[in-house]
Length: 441
Image (tube, rainbow, N blue to C red):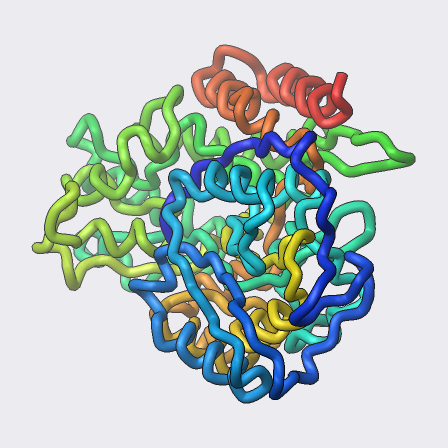
């Protein structure tokens, strides 16, 4: 899964003269019940925007969804347009401000917040029963679709970070199998450091100082949180004892096992290139990063093709696997769509059980926990499936994009990793900034 650019959508004046109504399908009220029963006489065009990942990674799943849709709406044309991550929000904002809008749009799960708050997507709260296994949607993805108690999109697929490791380095350090507990992980890291520590750039576990997806996984693993809403106000959780415990564990790991920069993130430089160069035994990354280590080009090293393994990040709190950030995508029906019934039928087909299995075969984590046991039987997916069982998500708040843009988390973590501030002082500062931003003050 590729790194997504997080952008705040400027939608305040865009919405909503033309709500979801009109001919060709769709209830008059934007939050009303939708029907996917089908209509053999309906005709027109359903416009779907998917990211280019689907075009290259699972085109057969898209074809299958459209074929299933046509069994209900045989005369409706499905027009699928593939978008690029770096500019799709700009294009969506422009479309929403006009009269010609896509009916279905794919969104990265951290991109939804401003759109949910602005009313850009149709309220599906009364229609979740139309979508397969909605009661067991991936916890993190489902959270990214909910705002103020209502559901505005459907989880599509997920990706979880796992630990990628050099099999050959493990073997030469006398490690016969991947660790299954946090204590084993730290002990194995020490063995690797003894074996390869002569390299001044060597990291037993590569952990950059601004790697907030990793650091906050430690926070959630310890029982902490970024922020929760209470009585209409956001209350920061980063200064809580649990959060401080998690951040302290994260710092201990960076101090003992990592030579990565204390003031950079995992993409500066790309951590997979550092592993490909031979300076890293373990890293915490997305599936595409593990594959890129041995890729031909873009900094990869094809000689390592058979030397990269993976395992679920062990929990420092003693559970089986550490909670992972729920990266992934959702499918939303725009509030201006005139074909909400058609859109819901296509989304239901695209996220149905058979299609989710097809997405699993393409290397994705399914949108429901029910399928995770099946995903765990696919060797390449097993570690990610384990970490996805209890995923976490950023606060679903209109102000969250401002938090990310401000870099308050990244800079605060750099202060912790570098020792510029104590864990408690840095946590207090991050907490105050996050709380203020989320509450609009």
